[in-house]
Image (cartoon, rainbow, N blue to C red; front, side, top):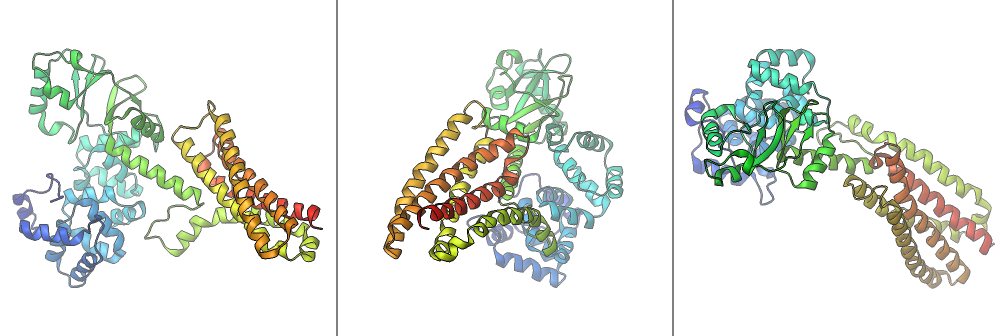
Amino acid sequence: MKREEADLTEAEMQKSGIAIPEPDVAEDLEDLALGDDYALNPEYVEMVIDAADRGDGERLRELVGALHPADVADLMGFLTADYREEVIPHLAPESLAEVISELEDNLREEVLEATPSATLARALEELDSDDAADVVDYLEDEKREQVLAAMDESDRAAIETSLSYAEETAGRLMQREVLAAPQFWTVGQTIDHIRSAGDELPELFFDIYVIDPSFKPVGAIPASTLLRAKRGANLVEIMEPVTEITTDMDQEEVAYIFDKYHLISAPVIDPGGRLVGQITVDDIVGVIQEESEEDILALAGVGDAGRDAGVLDAARSRLPWLVVNTITAALAASVIGAFQAEIGKLVTLAILMPVVASLGGNAGTQTLAVAVRALASRELNAANAVRIVMREMSVGLINGVALAAIMALAVFAVFHDGMLCLTIALALVINLFMASLAGILVPLALDRLGRDPAVSSSVFVTFVTDFMGFLSFLGLAAIILL
């Protein structure tokens, strides 16, 4: 089964009045719930809705209890608010905590509002400090105070410390639970400490951080290395160099370091260099996914309104850049107005000029996507910017010539006009060259100005390709054809 070992014991479930499904029944439900691609089956969602309509709490506990918390979170996204309120009370605190941490932002706020403060406090105590702090950050001030007041003092202090750091920094991302050992210990002493510490240790750890008397990390030992070493070996003999993360480092920078150095975990240090927590790879996977989604949405000029968002929220997230695009489109269209007389004399121009603009737009989008990805992955910087710009200009020129030849042949086959073929061929070469140039220079310029190139580059690149497409084609037509 996919349920984690941290689930409730049978005795705890009985004490809580939670029905215990037979193993084979739970297994069958899990197989029924998930398809081969691990997505929820529509039939399973209907079963949950049907149980809620009948008020069958025992059946609801059985259905959601067979799922991994991540799948329950996914289920929440397919249910309406009323049905979510029916399901929440049937989740055990341990499961509820993990479900909340997996929910989409807009759903998380709704579920948190519907969950009693005392229940939420018990649930958050089951999470690592970083996940608990992330959940508490979504609470309204009044409810946040109620939840924190109901929590254990040590858990409350850990969450308050995490929330004291700026958003999207390593301090907010890290978990305070960490396994550290003094540099004078041996392997045997460290293993004995791990066995005796029990619940005081992080639920999941990959490295043991070796610290000096001032609690500064001097090295790290992978758990696998520790278990292979002889008990009498000193930690300093087997430790490896450590890559430190500062509490104020941006989470995108942290993700880059993890990717570059293939880290599984890394210690987080305060301004004085003392060990205050750790970041593990599971946290970084979430950051990478979050940053990627932001960039994809930003390239399209939309915000993440969520699948459960209302019509007005979705419209509001997309409207701002559409307004900007309206202005740039009007400027591009003004070029057409300047050539009204020429278009009136040769109607064929009105048929072909959208083709030039469209092909230029596609070429610009291709270059823009490559540039934004390269900037995000640090593959494009001042050291190689000139070479990359020259490469994209060459690509634009080559593709422009190739498409010009194809389009010229097509135009000649339809209109039998050699000069018209020459006009559209030259316009395509010019526009694809300018599209490639804009596709690389616009994001570079925005990045140099400290702006996110994924957010507004597409609007400006589209403006350049439309403007140059109309200007080059109609301008050349006025010179060559009329």
